[in-house]
Amino acid sequence: GVPSGVQTMLREGLGHFRDGTFTSTYAMPRGDVNADAPMQSAEGFNWALFWGVTITCVVVGGAAAFAIRAAQAAAAVQAAAQAAAAAEAAAAATAAGGAAGGGLGAAVMAATLIALGDCLDGDTAITMADRTKKKIKKLQAGDKIL
Image (cartoon, rainbow, N blue to C red; front, top):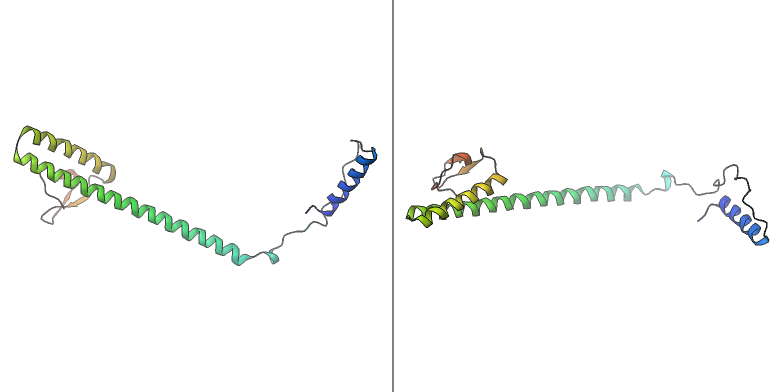
């Protein structure tokens, strides 16, 4: 609702308008016209609801951020695995010989380096087929990785 002080002014102004005595020269009201207006106090505030909603929003937002990060990491791992499989297939084709095989191997290796370059640092250790570790920047065409 409208505070009672303002309601009184509106009623008086409406009466002047109906009577035809309304002018724009009325002085602004003085004093506190909102003295009767309801004021919010901490006593009537539902703190349990406020903190419950706040904590719920923080927890749900944090869980969503964690889920997004986990999905991004899983996608990066899957892309690296697919690129490694493609590189292994290209290496096998190159080892089998033929100009087409060599060209395909080079193209797949370039795509692999581009894919890995976006996701992993050159100093990232990769597990080789013999279970040893090797930095990505040290990999060569034909290396077998897991």
